[in-house]
Image 1 (cartoon, helix red, strand yellow):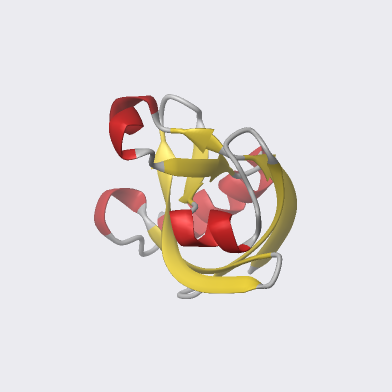
Image 2 (image 1 turned 90 degrees about the vertical axis):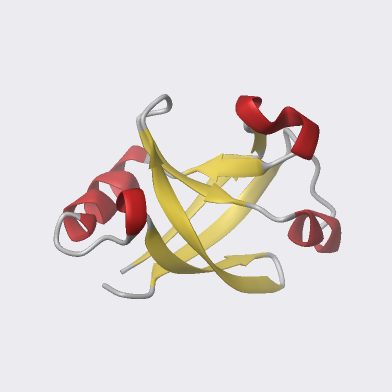
Length: 100
């Protein structure tokens, strides 16, 4: 199961001092992931994914964010630097579930 979308990079309010950044998945993608997660998600509903932004690919997890009502994807500082992305920029994202 693979999703491609554009999303703005935002900072998690609870960890502003650490600058944890994320993108929110579109509702349709989150709904499909939630269906799969119901059958075998890891801790707190997280799902392992392979992610590509620009020329950078890595493995991480997406997890549900009740406040935003969707799944969120962490975007590491190294990825932002490699792809010349700043907080508030829009990134083209490809997410593929690993365990689906």
